[in-house]
Amino acid sequence: MARILDSFPPPTQLTHPTRSRPTWLSCSMPISPNSTCFSSIPHNKQLTKAFAVPRRNAMALILSSYIFSEVGFNNIAFAQRSVGFREYIDQFDGYSLKHPQNWIQVRGAGADIFFRDPFVLDENLSVELSSPSSSNYKSVEDLGPPEEAGKKVLKQYLTEFMSTRLGVRRESNIISTSSRVADDGKLYYQVEVNIKSYANNNELAVMPQERVVRLEWNRRYMSVLGVENNRLYELRLQTPENVFVEEENDLRQVMDSFRVNKVTV
Image (cartoon, rainbow, N blue to C red; front, side):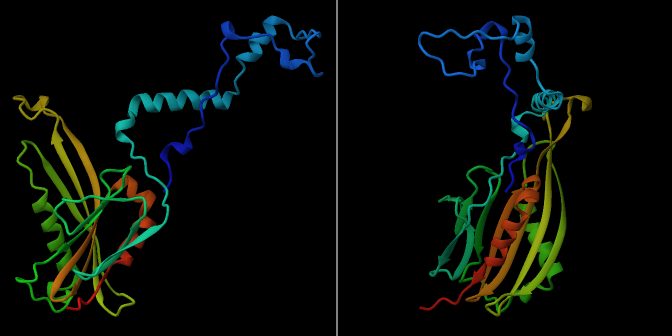
Protein backbone atom coordinates (compact mmCIF):
# COMPACT_ATOMS: atom_id res chain seq x y z
CA MET A 1 0.00 0.00 0.00
CA ALA A 2 1.74 3.01 -1.28
CA ARG A 3 2.68 6.04 0.82
CA ILE A 4 1.25 9.26 -0.57
CA LEU A 5 4.22 11.30 0.45
CA ASP A 6 6.69 9.11 -1.48
CA SER A 7 6.14 11.25 -4.58
CA PHE A 8 7.72 14.31 -2.95
CA PRO A 9 11.56 14.48 -2.94
CA PRO A 10 13.14 15.19 0.45
CA PRO A 11 13.86 18.89 1.04
CA THR A 12 17.42 19.91 0.23
CA GLN A 13 19.29 20.97 3.35
CA LEU A 14 20.81 24.43 2.94
CA THR A 15 23.90 25.63 4.76
CA HIS A 16 23.40 28.95 6.50
CA PRO A 17 26.28 31.36 5.86
CA THR A 18 26.49 32.41 9.52
CA ARG A 19 27.04 28.81 10.54
CA SER A 20 29.55 27.92 7.82
CA ARG A 21 32.92 26.70 8.95
CA PRO A 22 36.32 26.56 7.18
CA THR A 23 36.19 24.00 4.44
CA TRP A 24 38.84 21.79 5.95
CA LEU A 25 37.45 18.81 4.03
CA SER A 26 38.90 20.35 0.88
CA CYS A 27 42.33 19.20 1.98
CA SER A 28 43.18 16.08 0.00
CA MET A 29 45.92 14.85 2.36
CA PRO A 30 45.42 13.43 5.89
CA ILE A 31 45.57 16.14 8.53
CA SER A 32 48.10 15.82 11.28
CA PRO A 33 48.02 17.78 14.53
CA ASN A 34 50.93 19.95 13.32
CA SER A 35 49.69 20.56 9.81
CA THR A 36 47.62 23.49 8.58
CA CYS A 37 45.12 23.28 5.78
CA PHE A 38 43.54 26.29 4.06
CA SER A 39 40.76 26.31 1.51
CA SER A 40 41.81 27.42 -1.93
CA ILE A 41 38.30 28.69 -2.72
CA PRO A 42 37.70 32.43 -2.09
CA HIS A 43 35.33 33.18 0.78
CA ASN A 44 32.69 34.86 -1.36
CA LYS A 45 32.62 31.87 -3.73
CA GLN A 46 32.30 29.49 -0.77
CA LEU A 47 29.11 31.27 0.27
CA THR A 48 27.78 31.10 -3.26
CA LYS A 49 28.57 27.40 -3.47
CA ALA A 50 26.92 26.72 -0.11
CA PHE A 51 23.69 28.18 -1.40
CA ALA A 52 23.84 26.45 -4.77
CA VAL A 53 20.74 24.26 -5.13
CA PRO A 54 19.79 22.40 -8.31
CA ARG A 55 16.87 24.12 -9.99
CA ARG A 56 14.75 20.95 -10.05
CA ASN A 57 15.20 20.34 -6.30
CA ALA A 58 14.45 23.95 -5.49
CA MET A 59 11.22 23.91 -7.47
CA ALA A 60 10.17 20.61 -5.85
CA LEU A 61 10.86 22.06 -2.41
CA ILE A 62 8.76 25.16 -3.12
CA LEU A 63 5.94 23.11 -4.64
CA SER A 64 5.79 20.60 -1.79
CA SER A 65 5.78 23.39 0.80
CA TYR A 66 2.92 25.09 -0.99
CA ILE A 67 0.87 21.90 -1.27
CA PHE A 68 1.18 21.02 2.40
CA SER A 69 0.35 24.58 3.45
CA GLU A 70 -2.78 24.55 1.29
CA VAL A 71 -4.02 21.02 1.85
CA GLY A 72 -2.92 20.27 5.39
CA PHE A 73 -2.24 16.89 6.94
CA ASN A 74 -5.86 16.36 8.04
CA ASN A 75 -6.94 15.56 4.49
CA ILE A 76 -4.24 12.96 3.85
CA ALA A 77 -4.77 9.28 4.63
CA PHE A 78 -1.50 7.51 5.25
CA ALA A 79 -1.99 4.00 3.89
CA GLN A 80 0.55 1.41 4.92
CA ARG A 81 1.89 -1.31 2.68
CA SER A 82 0.52 -4.77 3.30
CA VAL A 83 2.59 -6.90 5.65
CA GLY A 84 0.81 -10.17 4.89
CA PHE A 85 -2.38 -11.77 6.13
CA ARG A 86 -3.47 -13.63 9.23
CA GLU A 87 -6.30 -16.16 9.28
CA TYR A 88 -9.13 -15.80 11.75
CA ILE A 89 -11.35 -18.85 12.39
CA ASP A 90 -14.51 -18.77 14.48
CA GLN A 91 -15.43 -22.42 15.06
CA PHE A 92 -18.27 -21.55 17.42
CA ASP A 93 -20.22 -19.38 14.95
CA GLY A 94 -18.91 -21.08 11.82
CA TYR A 95 -16.89 -18.72 9.60
CA SER A 96 -13.32 -17.83 8.70
CA LEU A 97 -11.47 -15.02 6.94
CA LYS A 98 -8.05 -13.52 6.38
CA HIS A 99 -7.18 -9.98 7.43
CA PRO A 100 -4.01 -7.86 7.17
CA GLN A 101 -1.86 -8.99 10.06
CA ASN A 102 -1.09 -5.43 11.19
CA TRP A 103 -4.81 -4.71 11.71
CA ILE A 104 -5.90 -4.75 15.35
CA GLN A 105 -8.98 -6.34 16.88
CA VAL A 106 -11.42 -4.01 18.62
CA ARG A 107 -13.67 -5.57 21.22
CA GLY A 108 -17.07 -4.23 22.15
CA ALA A 109 -17.70 -2.73 18.70
CA GLY A 110 -21.11 -4.40 18.39
CA ALA A 111 -20.20 -6.84 15.62
CA ASP A 112 -19.33 -10.50 16.07
CA ILE A 113 -15.74 -9.62 15.17
CA PHE A 114 -14.14 -6.27 14.31
CA PHE A 115 -10.68 -5.41 12.97
CA ARG A 116 -9.37 -2.01 11.90
CA ASP A 117 -6.30 -0.50 10.33
CA PRO A 118 -4.19 1.18 13.05
CA PHE A 119 -3.12 3.93 10.64
CA VAL A 120 -6.30 4.60 8.61
CA LEU A 121 -8.97 4.73 11.30
CA ASP A 122 -11.85 4.77 8.79
CA GLU A 123 -10.71 1.43 7.37
CA ASN A 124 -12.07 -1.68 9.06
CA LEU A 125 -13.81 -5.01 8.65
CA SER A 126 -16.52 -6.73 10.65
CA VAL A 127 -18.76 -9.79 10.50
CA GLU A 128 -22.51 -9.67 11.15
CA LEU A 129 -24.67 -12.76 11.77
CA SER A 130 -28.41 -13.21 11.71
CA SER A 131 -30.02 -14.53 14.85
CA PRO A 132 -30.16 -18.36 14.92
CA SER A 133 -33.59 -18.26 16.56
CA SER A 134 -35.26 -15.90 14.07
CA SER A 135 -33.71 -16.92 10.76
CA ASN A 136 -34.01 -20.00 8.62
CA TYR A 137 -31.92 -19.36 5.52
CA LYS A 138 -31.26 -22.24 3.16
CA SER A 139 -29.20 -20.36 0.58
CA VAL A 140 -27.99 -16.83 -0.12
CA GLU A 141 -30.42 -16.93 -3.02
CA ASP A 142 -33.18 -16.46 -0.43
CA LEU A 143 -32.26 -12.78 -0.70
CA GLY A 144 -33.14 -12.81 -4.39
CA PRO A 145 -30.67 -12.19 -7.23
CA PRO A 146 -27.48 -10.24 -6.46
CA GLU A 147 -29.05 -6.99 -7.66
CA GLU A 148 -31.88 -7.28 -5.12
CA ALA A 149 -29.44 -8.21 -2.40
CA GLY A 150 -27.40 -5.12 -3.27
CA LYS A 151 -30.42 -2.87 -2.73
CA LYS A 152 -31.05 -4.44 0.67
CA VAL A 153 -27.42 -4.02 1.69
CA LEU A 154 -27.39 -0.35 0.67
CA LYS A 155 -30.66 0.29 2.49
CA GLN A 156 -29.23 -1.27 5.64
CA TYR A 157 -26.12 0.92 5.46
CA LEU A 158 -28.17 4.09 5.01
CA THR A 159 -30.40 3.14 7.92
CA GLU A 160 -27.40 2.70 10.18
CA PHE A 161 -25.92 6.04 9.10
CA MET A 162 -29.05 8.10 9.66
CA SER A 163 -28.20 11.35 11.42
CA THR A 164 -30.28 13.79 13.45
CA ARG A 165 -27.90 16.67 12.71
CA LEU A 166 -29.26 19.59 10.71
CA GLY A 167 -28.08 19.89 7.14
CA VAL A 168 -26.65 16.39 6.79
CA ARG A 169 -27.15 14.83 3.37
CA ARG A 170 -26.05 11.43 2.09
CA GLU A 171 -25.45 10.41 -1.51
CA SER A 172 -25.16 6.73 -2.37
CA ASN A 173 -25.01 4.37 -5.30
CA ILE A 174 -24.46 0.67 -5.93
CA ILE A 175 -21.13 0.16 -7.69
CA SER A 176 -21.41 -3.56 -8.41
CA THR A 177 -23.17 -6.77 -7.44
CA SER A 178 -22.01 -10.28 -8.29
CA SER A 179 -22.14 -13.92 -7.24
CA ARG A 180 -19.47 -16.59 -7.13
CA VAL A 181 -19.00 -20.19 -6.09
CA ALA A 182 -15.95 -20.52 -3.85
CA ASP A 183 -13.64 -23.51 -3.48
CA ASP A 184 -15.88 -24.83 -0.68
CA GLY A 185 -18.69 -25.27 -3.20
CA LYS A 186 -20.89 -22.61 -1.56
CA LEU A 187 -22.51 -19.63 -3.27
CA TYR A 188 -21.57 -16.13 -2.14
CA TYR A 189 -22.86 -12.69 -3.10
CA GLN A 190 -20.58 -9.65 -3.30
CA VAL A 191 -21.90 -6.10 -3.11
CA GLU A 192 -19.98 -2.82 -3.39
CA VAL A 193 -21.52 0.57 -2.69
CA ASN A 194 -20.30 4.13 -2.35
CA ILE A 195 -21.68 6.57 0.23
CA LYS A 196 -20.80 10.25 0.55
CA SER A 197 -21.76 12.40 3.51
CA TYR A 198 -22.26 16.17 3.23
CA ALA A 199 -22.91 18.61 6.06
CA ASN A 200 -23.22 22.36 6.64
CA ASN A 201 -20.28 24.08 8.25
CA ASN A 202 -22.71 26.12 10.38
CA GLU A 203 -25.83 24.16 11.31
CA LEU A 204 -27.47 27.02 13.25
CA ALA A 205 -26.90 29.76 10.67
CA VAL A 206 -29.98 31.77 9.75
CA MET A 207 -28.97 33.01 6.32
CA PRO A 208 -28.51 30.42 3.54
CA GLN A 209 -25.22 31.99 2.44
CA GLU A 210 -23.82 31.30 5.89
CA ARG A 211 -24.44 27.57 5.54
CA VAL A 212 -21.68 26.17 3.34
CA VAL A 213 -22.07 22.51 2.41
CA ARG A 214 -18.87 20.48 2.61
CA LEU A 215 -17.94 16.85 2.04
CA GLU A 216 -17.47 15.04 5.36
CA TRP A 217 -16.38 11.66 4.04
CA ASN A 218 -16.40 9.51 0.91
CA ARG A 219 -16.26 5.76 1.56
CA ARG A 220 -16.41 2.42 -0.22
CA TYR A 221 -18.42 -0.34 1.48
CA MET A 222 -17.99 -3.95 0.40
CA SER A 223 -20.09 -6.87 1.62
CA VAL A 224 -19.77 -10.61 1.13
CA LEU A 225 -22.91 -12.61 1.93
CA GLY A 226 -23.11 -16.34 2.61
CA VAL A 227 -25.51 -18.79 4.25
CA GLU A 228 -24.76 -21.75 6.50
CA ASN A 229 -26.27 -23.21 9.67
CA ASN A 230 -29.58 -21.58 8.66
CA ARG A 231 -27.97 -18.19 9.28
CA LEU A 232 -27.02 -15.28 7.03
CA TYR A 233 -23.37 -14.21 7.36
CA GLU A 234 -22.10 -10.85 6.14
CA LEU A 235 -18.48 -9.76 5.93
CA ARG A 236 -18.27 -5.96 5.81
CA LEU A 237 -15.30 -3.91 4.65
CA GLN A 238 -15.15 -0.13 4.94
CA THR A 239 -12.45 2.14 3.52
CA PRO A 240 -12.11 5.73 2.28
CA GLU A 241 -12.28 5.91 -1.50
CA ASN A 242 -8.81 7.46 -1.82
CA VAL A 243 -7.34 4.59 0.24
CA PHE A 244 -9.27 1.98 -1.74
CA VAL A 245 -7.36 3.00 -4.86
CA GLU A 246 -4.10 2.10 -3.11
CA GLU A 247 -5.27 -1.03 -1.28
CA GLU A 248 -7.79 -2.58 -3.65
CA ASN A 249 -5.77 -5.75 -4.20
CA ASP A 250 -5.44 -6.49 -0.47
CA LEU A 251 -9.08 -5.71 0.24
CA ARG A 252 -10.25 -8.04 -2.51
CA GLN A 253 -8.08 -10.80 -1.07
CA VAL A 254 -9.89 -10.33 2.24
CA MET A 255 -13.25 -10.57 0.46
CA ASP A 256 -12.25 -13.71 -1.42
CA SER A 257 -11.04 -15.38 1.78
CA PHE A 258 -14.39 -15.25 3.57
CA ARG A 259 -15.93 -18.70 4.17
CA VAL A 260 -18.94 -19.94 6.11
CA ASN A 261 -18.54 -23.33 7.79
CA LYS A 262 -20.81 -25.98 9.21
CA VAL A 263 -20.98 -25.88 12.99
CA THR A 264 -20.75 -29.30 14.59
CA VAL A 265 -22.50 -29.66 17.93
